[in-house]
Amino acid sequence: MWSELMDHLCPQLDTAFTASFAALPRLAEIATAASPETLGEVLSAAGAIASCSPGLSEPDSPLTVFSAPIEVLHDLTDRRLSQTAEAEEYVNLLQALLSFEGVEIWDRSLDGLHTGEYEVDCPYCGVNVFVVIGQDDRFCCTDDYALQAVQKSPLQPARRQQLEGLPRRLFARALADGQEGLAHGVRYLFGRAACPNCGTDFSVAERVMAGWIP
Ligand SMILES: [Zn+2]
Image (cartoon, rainbow, N blue to C red; front, side):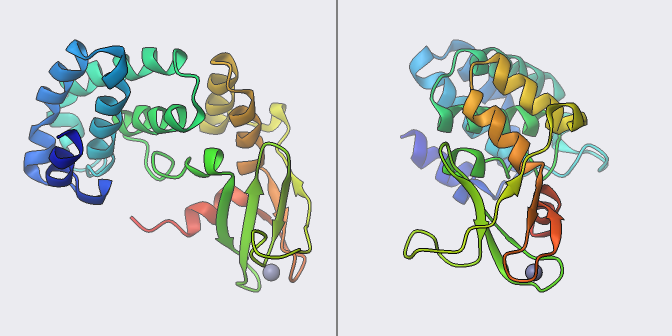
């Protein structure tokens, strides 16, 4: 029933309508009354809707119009995060938290931290580069590493001290919530890679942002 409702409110989780935003106050009520078993789902759904909103700088942004229920959803998400152990759900909630704050791009681009992969293009030669941020193995390559042996180029994670702003916050938050694997993934996501094809050194996060299609 829940997924059917979301098909209407937020198809593919990336399209929202006036009625979707208008449902945020009701979703805040549902979330406030939700059991621990369903709370994560409700918050992720509301986060998906919020992430479709025009930014806070837009006149009459739904994030401003519905700021009261969004604050409720944000607080519930903030608390729920600290109680969530499963990495995929944790990343979904972290993205929802950013959506409620109006953070763009990263509210939809953290999935790779739990799937273990980002696909970007080299800023110099344009070749497609897989950036693999797994629990055990971290590298980049140009061919599908799942299908064949590939030439792996090392990644250079950001040092903790180098992290600032949002990356610093994501790292510290994941660490504080016991998500060490994700926290270290953040260092790789905001670190550097060298193109296996042409050797050009680039920022992984900048290429993720460059490839972002709203
Ligand atoms: Zn290249």
